[in-house]
Amino acid sequence: MDMEKAYFKGRGSQIQTGNKFLERRVVFEHVEGLDEDLLSVPKTEIFLEHPKTIVNPVKSPDLPMAFSLNPYQGCEHGCSYCYARNTHEFYGFTAGLDFETKLMAKPEAPMLLEKFLLNPRWKVAPISLSGNTDCYQPLEKKMEITRRLLEVFVKYRHPVGLITKNSLILRDLDLLQDLAKESLVRVYISITTLNEDLRRKMEPRTASASKRLDTIRQLTEAGVPVGVMSAPIIPGLNHHEIPQILKESAANGAVGAGMTAVRLNGKVGDVFGDWLRKNFPDRYQKVMHQVAEMHGGTINDSQFGRRMRGEGPIAGMIQQLFRHSRSKYFRDREFPEFNLMAFRRGGNLSLDF
Image (cartoon, rainbow, N blue to C red; front, side, top):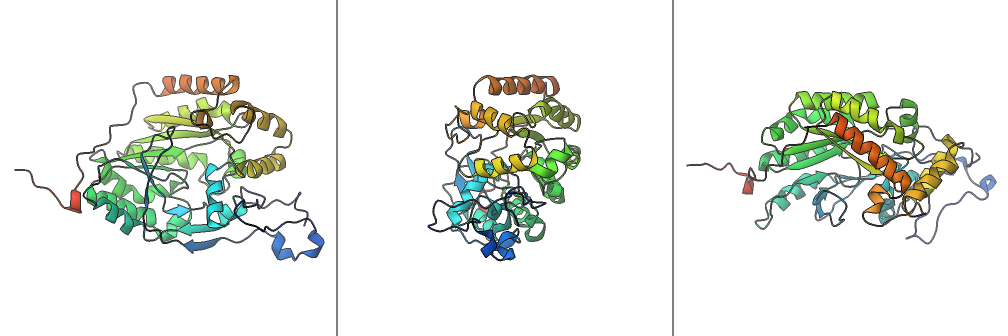
């Protein structure tokens, strides 16, 4: 198999990147001496992780959340641009195919969350699911860790935010409705593109755009406040879709809209660049050049403030297009404020006399 020409359908990454923490790596310099098994796409494996804590303070100044919770590491959605790929190296894996085939689940997360909320020193603040990988990725259908986490949030009447690309969130509509009654939940549905051909290549195991729009509609009709996250914006691929994404989302009931620019830190640049070259060879130079132009001349941008939005003429054009679209389709719409007063410390009902 020629690794330059190989294409693994249903996978966002087409390569195994190296790991800076490991001394050795598998390479394909002499393919004639390797067994075919080493050249084929790896099967999905599930590993159980048993952390001591589960709620993480978010220290990044350009992220709106204060605390995050990740029931899974790695993500079978396989988005070729995903910034979270780099975190897989901390577990001894790669940001490439490993990220979407070697998944880690945290079955004790609900118990750890409850333990966290029982801390008498905890000052109520919204906790976001998830800051790293999608809490409703396909594995959730089997393991139901996110559902059990929501049951804890319901029990303690604690505010929670969720973001997902998967319509599986509708399975938990009963819990979301319960939380929404007291302004304890806020949902974002991420929509990168309405072009199904691009979606299947770029986000191979995610819900279709039409399903995501329908998910916004069903959540809205159930009384659950929901917004759209148009992210990431990739110049030369999907930036022109911003107005239509916001228009369709608003028509289905979304009350808020956000966006981020693509950022290709670490090995994500290798994964995305390889994917782009194989799927859109005619656009490769233009897209990569424009991404670099938005990030100070490099695709590997970690500068706070710029990394999420970009800067320069291209980023300015994208931001202006987003602001105009949001003003047009989301005028007089906004999320209700999170309710921080309903928290049941200790999980018990309180009686007012």
